[in-house]
Length: 338
Image (cartoon, rainbow, N blue to C red):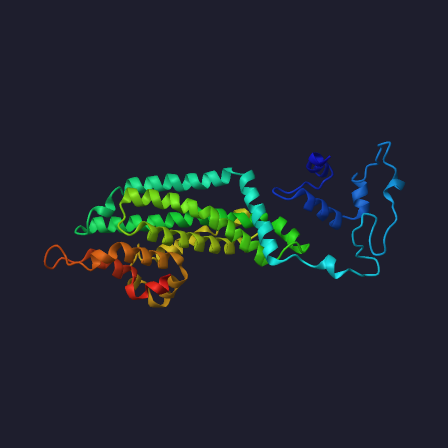
């Protein structure tokens, strides 16, 4: 029976790998192992059911088709164009998208854990920086904490979405290779459906996180603007994570790429070291980091108004302007950051 497939193959020396489609594994074993070896291991038990008569399986065949009515690809090497025609791109994307949603509905624990992570981290960051956005700009320590809170808000959007996307493709790689090799769909339709699914799942996740941090930290920029920046950064991080995940076969190896994805983002964002202090021959890396652009957009919206104000006392430096200068944020280049 179908439920005994895994134990049947395990008992005969060909265990189904973890997270591998049993139907694909059956085809793989049938193609890779000689028939004599399969027979020796007991893959062909005799059918002792009284009604199972061999002659009942044979019916009249049409030319070019087998007994079941499928195209015979080995008869005269003729295959009709209708049998080889692949379905359209839109149909591929819609069917793959539907399957992705079904997988999410069947396995809800990762989705719940994803939202729980965003909720817990947003509450933690919001409490640590409670009301810091409304404390003014006269004290540099307050401005620096305000800056740090904004960086953490953006970093959470990257962590919360990049990690699941980075591990997803290595886990699904065997199924993807089997289905792609049998001409089920194209590479582009697969990844379009994946990104569409991530876009739908990511938006409520970012909405939850942004709402909590915005209210607790008392950020000054418009809420819709912050949500747009956070959501765009999250989707960009998802795309980069998928790219890295496609380059490895093992999910454990994929997790080793996380520092490569996040550490350069922090180092070149202008938080730990001012952009102008980075060696000139290395500054170009900042333009490859999505966090750099997102942070500059957020800083211009959050600290731009107070940067235009004069200090509370004569000769007092404008701390907001110092934050913008250290991060390299330029109001005239806002369109480029987007």
